[in-house]
Length: 270
Image (cartoon, rainbow, N blue to C red; front, side):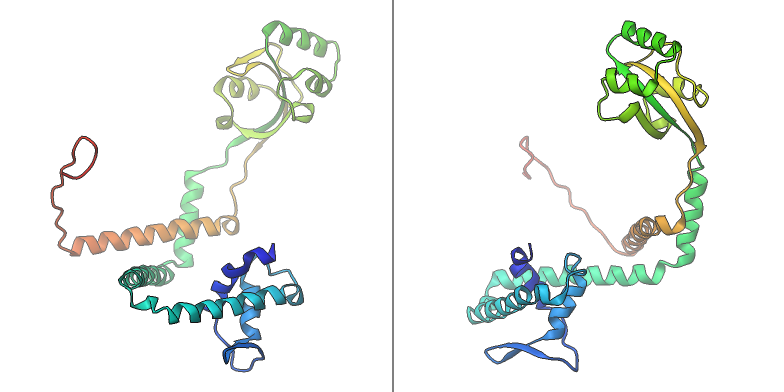
């Protein structure tokens, strides 16, 4: 896996900074490659964090060396003087400028207080929902479902019947785990949430999937995720809001003229 990273790692490596006190691990035509550069790539690359440096040292070093060789070859080819390079560099520069500007604005405007306010609003908009645990047996016909209910009435084990007869394979004992009303089709939820813990449906429940016999487990209120669990999601939503507000503000101050464009039947501009 590490060898396949090859030049991809090297490209990352090329942009790493060199520490003041360091060890030269190689030179390419006199240009130094420092140990700190290899260490920085290892620390910042998710796949390499938990791997000892000696395990990835050789492929990392080869990647750096290959990058230096390619850098020199590219520079000697004078590709930087081509119009394509200049156009691509200009576009990359613009994109980087926008990216860094927005990141700076988000960092400045995205306060802990605002994130907490968003979390409080989330809790208001998403109050705890009723959830229940249930198991079911799914069969193709109403007659078969009634036969299984008769077996349950005589003391048969629900889980054993589910394992033997249910069309919904891969659920030991027919266990569906916990779910809210919205996660199941309405006919199923309506019947399931009427049952108390330990009860099973005395009549088959028909849905688009077939005929069900439902056995209720525990009922509970779903817990709202903690702020810590939602922090990354809140930060992402907050960042989107900040960017939207910035663009809206800039648009209100700019003079924007949109010229009319007509399209032909093929969708091309006339």
